[in-house]
Length: 357
Image 1 (tube, rainbow, N blue to C red):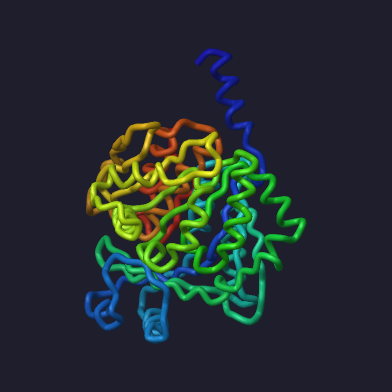
Image 2: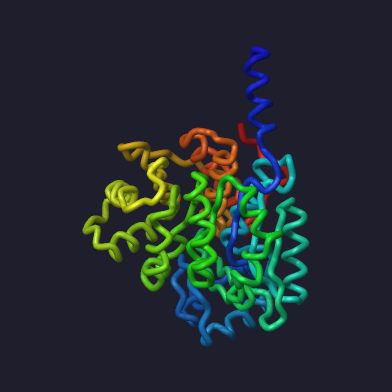
């Protein structure tokens, strides 16, 4: 490497500073256990899905906790992604900021501690009316069925947190924003405020389709935010549901990506990028006017411990490269790397350091 190249690669790392990546979403404590098909059937769960808890799921949480091998991990889709991004970046600490709502309870303390250990600059809105949210991760083979009991996460208030000067200043410091579609069920007005800020200042706003139910039941708030979305993530199931809800009349994933890219957009200085992952199959991304396939990292099926957090970690890896202004193919490669590491472990957890070059 020439001196000049050494300087530019150093310069690239040095360009990172605190609070450059902003995330906002539902902070949840994952309660993870391996279950069997009978358990899924008993609570009417699909093997690979994510849903919001209803009254009939109350017993599910109680039963899951009684199982002999239950693990607790800090979760919540957006929080997972910014945590993985911070892990990929390593230093400086606190490049990633996270906003969300928790309860003043033991689970809330765990989330605070875990965010701190991950060197994420988490600023939680804390209230005592609802307990900290939880997410039951019911693992069968390489499938995971997620049931989220939002509780406190559902109590996020724009005027009580996002609008406060000290907090809004952190939003303004960022140059890349990421909010999972799940937060549309909680505070669409907070999302819009951040999205409009990013658009007005020509910064990058990213969003995730997150789950089929978002496109089905929260299509209106989703489509209000869409004109501000610079990068949209999703998996093949979410993409298909989104296409159906919007009447795209195609189930070809490349075609869906193209049509999604061409939806109306506020900031015309940036062409929208759409990235759809497909589990073990190639990821699909719009590159300029074309749609390109990006193969995943090969993995032995036997090495897959659980796929909970695979999508979140793909986004986290992607964001870690994006915030360093790397080209799209490198962002996707970083995403594939992170997902490959996380599916070999329980929950959305990671080793001490990444080995990504």
